[in-house]
Image (tube, rainbow, N blue to C red):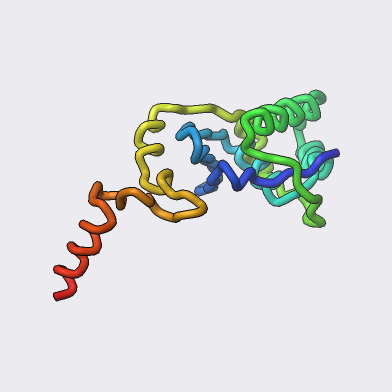
Amino acid sequence: MASYKLNEEKMFADITDGIAIVINSETGIYYGMNGLGSNVFENLMKGISVENVLTALKGISGAPADIENRLNAFVEAVVAKELLIEGSDSSETANIDSGAATEDEFTMTVDEYNDAQELLLADPIHEVKEETGWTPEKDSIGYTKEETREREKKMEN
């Protein structure tokens, strides 16, 4: 089975208190996952194979007979949303939180949100160009480069 990694070209991911938040820096859409989804996503981001994650899930008491289908549907969803892309296989063993698995009834979800899209896209980092760096025409506060240099000189004196 396949191994994955975070699509770092487009995505920023943070997992805090067992909950994953992934932000698409190009669209401003962000994604949230439930506890088990976050745990599985974290393992997949590390390059742990889907097969290894499945083995760990099956080893949890009470795992449903359709756990493979559930895992595959979750993997398909995060890949379709371009959160993960194919990567190299890690030698690490999957670490699945059995508490999250039973609490979420072995359901893995990924939800898409666009309510902060304008705010996330307004961040001046989106004005960075590889060849010229931060906003070649203006600096992020709206002054031309010349005006910015003059203001900086005044502040130095």
